[in-house]
Image (cartoon, rainbow, N blue to C red; front, side, top):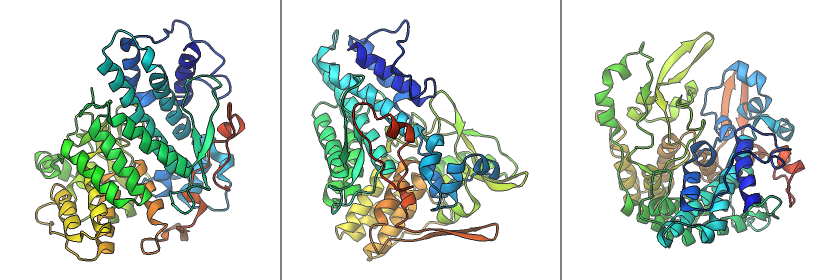
Length: 470
């Protein structure tokens, strides 16, 4: 177990920049305790920066959701390549500015591996405490692999999933443990098996919002099955999640309570976000752009990004405000705090359910679900029920809401990649800046992020193949 614990600690340090990729396994930290008891193991899952934190910076930049100033684009060449959709640039050579997603995810996985591997040896606990903690770690591990699969590998396609590589499947916290870079089909099967196994022992609601319970596991299964195009099972698991928690935050009431500040064009005072650990829509809380030790604002938005919000969307109105600073004009974040950007929430599950219903021919029911979400977001004088009998139109409307609701998470990127595989939903993104028109096609290799060169060159006890040409 000693080797496992060393690996756990330093994978976390690598992800947060404390140790380099080359030496983190060679240093024994002083004063550290090898975990033996439940009281030793359980706090490992309360480490928010190390376990419950994933940046997906380049996915957000590629989607052009986030405003990035000229100086950042000049300094970070990888950002520039994705922001301007430069297909000629070899992003593999620039990837040292985007290693967080990879190493942070595997740091979290290593913690989960430590708990899952050693659960049977855990002392000073009841059998229920032991099995629940192991099950909780399984859900977190599965979510990490979903993010990795939808960042560094091709989108799931049943026709090619057995032939294309995903990412290394690492199931041990042992230093030097062998691993295999599995194919996409194998990784999705693993995630499903992991969650089904966890559900046997999970409590309905987790110990804390950092401990996913049955609702979170069902929500993640719904997300995975939607990504695989298995709409009946996506619907089934969405319904099970909503039976556990179906609450939606009332953004209209929030707007009315804060209307004076929100509507004042000169008031840029940051307000504490309601989308924090106590957000009523949470199944599981996970940080996005920054770790939990920092209270931050959200990303700012590009001017043209607001065109994709509905008129009267108070969740947008409450979160961003038009601002000019020097040469830059953008929509500035108006909220600070701890944001649940990469976790699991009821609003995502509602929108998964809506798409699954539309895909299975229940378009009227799909629109009812979508409208139930919109009623908590759109100003009364702007609101009208959306109605259609066309499943394609319904899914486009559902996606509009979903891309806005889950902005800055892995989900908009994963959904865009998924929909790019269907002719009826494929679209080329375009923009004009500085008199130059740029475009991103559905077939572009840019939709897969390069695995960091550090991992390719130092694969440990296994081999890692790059999944994208450049």
